[in-house]
Amino acid sequence: MRRASPLTQMTLALVALAGTLILLADLFLGVLPDRAAQQRMLRKSIGENLAVQVAEQLRTSDAATIGRSLAAIAERTPDLRSIGLRRSRDQVLLAQAGEHARLWEPMTGAASRDNQILVPLTSSAGPWGSLELGFAPDESNPVLRQLLQPMTLLLIFFSSVGTLVFWLYMRRALQHLDPASVIPERVQGAFDTMAEGVVVLDVRGRVLLANRSFRLLHQDAADLRSGGALSTLPWLAASLPADLAQHAWSRALAEKAPNAGSTLEIMDSDGQLRQLVVNAAPVTDSGRRVRGCLVTFSDVTELHRANAALRDALSALSASNAEIERKNRELHDLATRDPLTGCLNRRALDAAIAGLREGAGTAAVQLGCIMVDIDHFKRVNDQHGHAVGDRVIQEVAKKLHQAARATDLVCRFGGEEFCVVVPGVGAAEMMAFAERVRERIERECGPAVREVQGLRVTASIGVEVGSIGSTGIAPLIGRADEALYAAKRSGRNRVCLFTERAPASPVAGAEHA
Image (cartoon, helix red, strand yellow):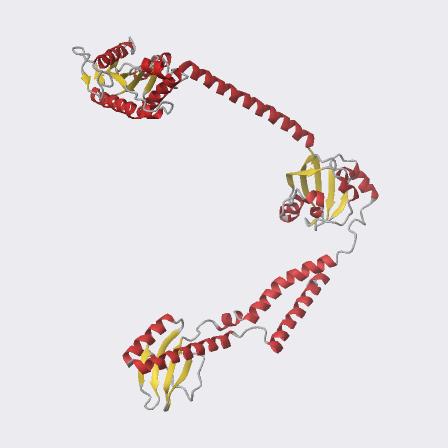
């Protein structure tokens, strides 16, 4: 049988000595509570408090009322199986909760037991009776009950945790030998010729050997002394994981397998960051037992700088592409949008209609079209200036955009004239849409132009619904334009639907010429 090491023997001796001191302290000072005694005291206190309540009820209540009170108390109190109120002169059970008459065992004298509490009740004439409380017996396993005693739990905890703590302390205290004393000079010289930083560790992660390249990684590494833990070097520990078990050499020792490719960043004496790649491999003997660890540190700072420069160039190229895309979007907007209102221009409207025709193939494309013209716009420019006129145009365009759907096309057709094309609607729907637009313009556009108080803005609207063919949308717009002029001739601020027989038939609005 293998004999325990001196470190293990000393640890066990310290644990045994400390455990003995705990037992003596409890024996002479009673520092740990007795759970059974505490339970008895608690149950006795419950009985005494309940006796006071019952004595008070005896003066004012009958036995039935007292019985109901006892039943309520028994239901709310854990482990309380039954309660009985017994008169001493005839031993009659006046009131009870639970199956007290069956569960209660007669007691000699007035002494209470663990599971039965007897509280005497007295009156002015002398002893009156007693209050009997029956608690549920402890049916748990005796061995488990003993294990859960405070003293047993304390000894188990101290034996397990104390063994580990004392072992770690004693191991640290006994580390007084220099682990590098057996490294020959020729081995050190061979390692110094290597370009990579090389460190040899023992099984505890302490430095046995470090070559010249490793000592040049940092100014503090030049004075590295053998015997210290590699993980505790200040200049290296700052970039290592907080968990020691995650260090490359710790994992190699624990897993008995190489750990390669870990990366670190350290600050050199010039304040520059240096990137290191760490590889660790366990050193084993012929019996596959781990005897140490070989750790290499490769300086890849220049490679990282080259990669960083390449990333910067790619980032600059990406930013340039994004700027080009933004400029292209601006050019597209300038080519297709009216700069004052953001509406489509006429060329963009024609292109959008052509796209609808191509998407429909040979099928006819049903479109609704309204032509909107701001009433008396020249008067607005003459009386309030072109700046106010531009604001009026912007507000009308805003109302058109708000009323239109995402698939509808809103175009600024001329100075104060707009065209809205709505796919897939009938004449009734288009007339209702046009009337909503007219009402919003009349109701909201004037107050929105805050530069002029009391400004009133209205619009005349022509409506046409039909399909487009090879000639495009021009005929449809032309008919809607005819309906627009019919609305103007009919008194403005109104909606007119184009008809071949009566292109001027209006839908009356709120204003007449």
